[in-house]
Image 1 (cartoon, rainbow, N blue to C red):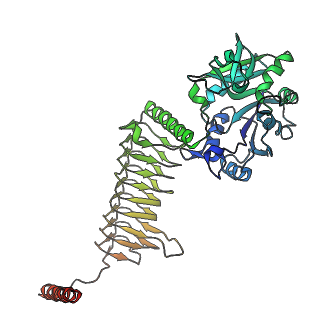
Image 2: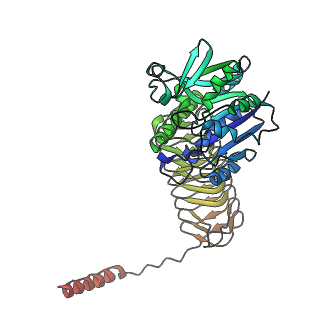
Image 3: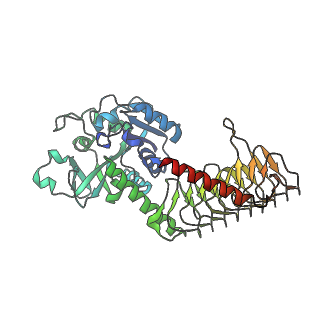
Length: 451
């Protein structure tokens, strides 16, 4: 049976106090909408439709990066969840299969839970996702009769007895597309909010003799986000889950609570990560890497056996081959560091390539920017770059070449050559004492004049 994902993402999110649509606010460097989509991809959907409203152009632009095949439909007026799903009718006019309704602001529903919902469709026409709430608060309640879901009642429409029920509605629903649209046509707005509720489909389905059931999931999967405080809590939940998954997969986190991970962070087994390390988006770390404290990564790849940090920064385009050493206060950007190379101290390597087993001395800088254009530096294999060398790009340092300490290199250095590019030192006997005496006398005159 084919599956279509319908993701409701039209809410303005007034409590976020933001110009950005609520579903585009990030959790671990990815929009919460992308988190919701991630679980849905496990169903290998034939179609994905996002129902946007407030800030629809922002949503459309973001979805072009997240899933270029997804379709965007706009709910011009937010008249309720059934009304939102109804906006997809034309887009799905040629679709024959199941619709799974997700919410862009409920990002943590798991792929396994969605698969169980589809599995339940084998014996039920309509499947709702529920959860047992520690504090049911203002959630809609699921009224069950054995495995049969009788109806869903919104909190504001519930009796006192119904409010005592702790099995609650997550909002997610799955059913045959044609049947769901036929049921939506029967929904009215005769309720306390004057909206068209998707939840009304349960009673309408039962009135038509259809089978309706509910699948249960852990309450943490149904965390909804309506405020900045909710967003912070969602990030905390994500970080806890991601850390636990990594440790279960063989990664050592010396102080897990201080390691911050991104949505797409990939780390191989037997990697050791010291406290206070931040992973931005698009970072892959292979097996057996040692990452020391206070390092920051984004858009980079670290190969097995490498050692990085402390206080290292790897920016987008940084590519470390196996067994490289990147030390304290070193920044790498858009550069390839070949196998066994070392950049151990206080250096900036940008728009460059560093050959195998090359050693970069402390204080080395690739001067890659002329104020308008970026230029590349190429350093060969087994080269030795002396401390405090300025490599003024574009420039090439050959294999087994050397630069002297303090050199300002503006010309390429051939293989095996030594580049010395600094002014000749001259010592002037007694000149230091004379200069200091002159300066002290000047200071005394200025001080007396000020009085």
